[in-house]
Length: 237
Image (tube, rainbow, N blue to C red; front, top):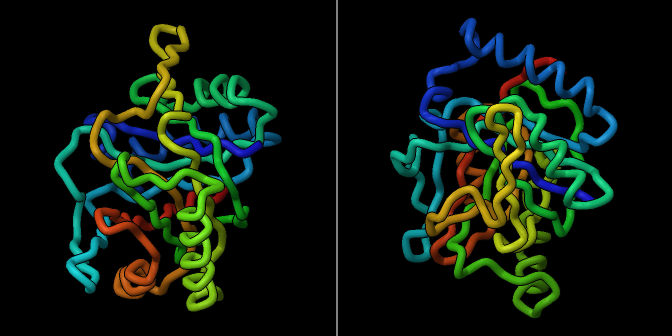
């Protein structure tokens, strides 16, 4: 079964930008983790800082595109993994070994579906699909079936650029993992008590921010939903 591990970084990690010694040191730690956990890793990406994000919301019938972080929250998504594990306990144990778990947190959620991607390149982007917790659609409902049709229509429109993606189960199924002083701390529920949660993800290619934003405007979302577009860091593994 596939599990989505959202890597949540704290304030101290926001300044670790690609090309800096601090970022390179982090890449080394993640390379070691991926070598150990390679058999269970079914996807994932490191993301450029949230300051470079593009956010898309609905303004009536039109998309509203804004640059930069959506809010000034101290904790932001720095990347994600998709694990292929036999059960949630195995995914939680693996999440505890992610380097960021020692200072930030990892949210682990079962996935409804996952379309795997290849090795990310310099022109790859991620679209994180945020939804209000109260508006998350339950799988195997008529509303879910209707949403699937909308996403299939989107994929037909831009299919040549899509490299992977998936949908997550509701936030009530989440487990938040932290590693402190060598002890794994496990908390039921999402990492944030805020109104929004990540509900799905796309991985796609684009020539630059303008094209990435244009693609994101076509992604289906709820009336209060938001699409956060982030460029993927080409870390070479």
